[in-house]
Image (cartoon, rainbow, N blue to C red; front, side, top):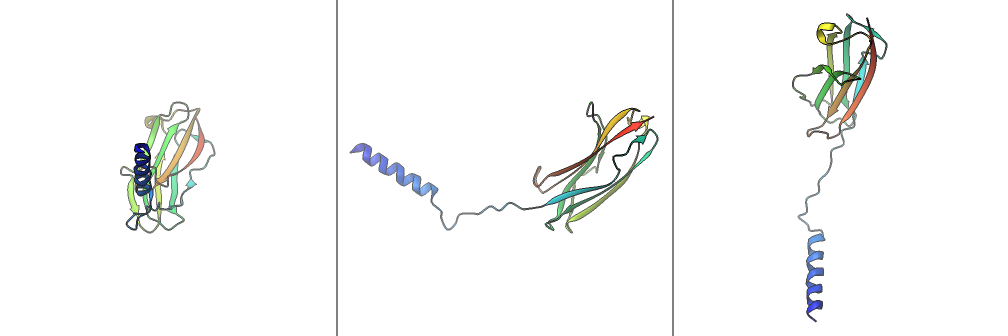
Length: 144
């Protein structure tokens, strides 16, 4: 009999804990549908001394704000980073798109060596780190 009472109390507690109440908060995840469209540079080979034109459109196809962006260039072999912009990733473009343009010289002074492979990575994400995150990449080779 004692076990029956304990079992009844346990099941009652379980049902109370898992039942839906009217004051239960529903958490909805925002659908950002982010994209990073890399218009420049392209994947064609480059040369030491070339000026790399960077032109990227970050946008939300769900018409949500573009909260954070990052553009970086790094070496394929050792992940050595030679470019990382903007200085502050939080841009909060409320119209749902942000155009990023810059120029970068592929020079020895900037860490670029001939006969090396590089990746340009464009990343966009929501209010919190990783939220709705999308990363687009292009790879290119640098000749002397």
